[in-house]
Length: 609
Image (cartoon, rainbow, N blue to C red; front, side, top):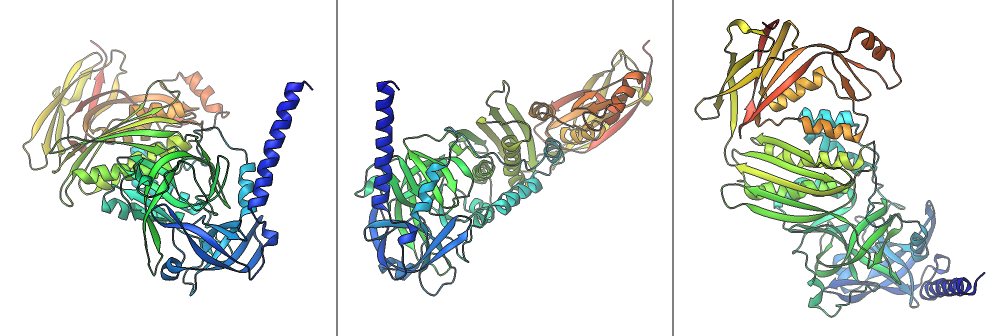
């Protein structure tokens, strides 16, 4: 072995040995913990000042879970005696004879005394042995729906129901992490700048995850400078934040640092969400105060400077790395209403399960800030989702009127983002998101009351240009007329055909029934999304007979009989969907209204003259 390589190997071995020796010196393994031992814990109750509380070991539980032991302890002290085990104390280091034995992590609801469960430190340190993903990686979820199911939910305006299903699958799949009847100490989720009813609406999705939504001040890089601890490094007992959203709105989970080993920071002592490899910004936190509560006492906190990134979220705690960066998704939101346009910017965590929820909350708050608490309303959405590796963004246009507008918009955005990030075809990273709302405090709905062809009895010839006249009646407004000039194709077969004039969203549903999509790639899903027409467009479709099929996600129109037979007999790509009618063309006029209704006009097509 060359001398240089040997020297490096010896140096590395020395460093590893020194680190292991330091950990052994500063920690006490579970095997040495005994009932009756006395010690103390450290946490922050106010500002960034570490405060001690007393600990008495009341027992140890071996193998209470797969590879898990638990230490039982009674805790006491001025604050704990008044408030009990407090949400936000997760990870508080517990010391016996000056050595860390583990992290305060579990509690028993309705316990008459402040009894807690401690996760042994030797189990927490094993987190570092798990291989992590590169910076910026996010947890890939099992697909919640197929591409076809996703497109159907979009077209049939069932995104609210789909969003509920997404959230229930996430909360249902998240382990309760109950150990010997105990539950993880709740994690305060500090939230700033959100509308109160946003917190009320989305809180039901956060509670089952072990989060306790708590109001907070705005995040600030100087939030931790009001007290004595201004170091960018962490120490055991410090308050620590896992940032889910930052910018004009902020969301961060607050816990306590258990142990610091070089650049590695261990915290919580129980899972954050038990998601494995993660990429959350890791931030300093300042505790504003403690609120004693019979239900569950908790800490108020402000989130400070981001100083690293969490990389592991395991059953025995979370681990972050100082100085590393967690890649986030930049999101720009703008809302126009009766007053000046309001612009917001946030960075959202990159996570296939949490990103849709956090994105929905931000969108909901923006809409809430632009509308009245009650009454009529119309909201038009324009959104652009840019994906890494795709030349063109996903562009979304849609509108909602009435009470359902507030409910539908966040769900719509969340379902699209959620599907893209957890689709069944390929990994897809969202590069950026732009969301633009136009809000009005009235119902901008226009109902189609009439549509007719100026050619008598619908008789047309291939190659003709015919005029279609549509009469629309806005809600509490005067009727108006819109017209289309429709060119009948030169090769249009003689016989029956028909026109549909109506809302773009209604014609989307018709097209899906006639030519059901069967996407076999993410590109095909996105291609269908791009073809969808919003309900704010008055749309005309020319429909004619055909003999086609959808196979392997591709629509093949007007197949000759021999080719049709070949396609029908080939089942290697799954079942084929026969197509008897299809839209040969679409014309659309944006109106700025939600178009209501559809009218069918039958055609008798004659050969070209």
